[in-house]
Image (cartoon, rainbow, N blue to C red; front, side, top):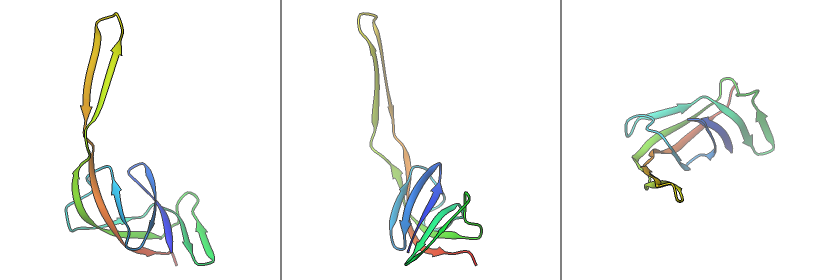
Length: 105
């Protein structure tokens, strides 16, 4: 069984026991998280599609880790104009282990 969820503006294909990385700090370590924006659930031969979400369905997970991704350098340059602009960015992330996929009844 797997599901497609929407979290923090991105869509993730998840299954039970999988660890996903979401680019945001969702909550505290060890806390349980529920994603109620479920777009699709696939179980054996049956498939449920939401319009846009499946009402009453949830995906549960536990927050395992917080951190920051490696630095990304953004360098803007215009030749012969004495224009140089260098910026860096490190994105926060949360790793979440999916514990359960609940279908609507």
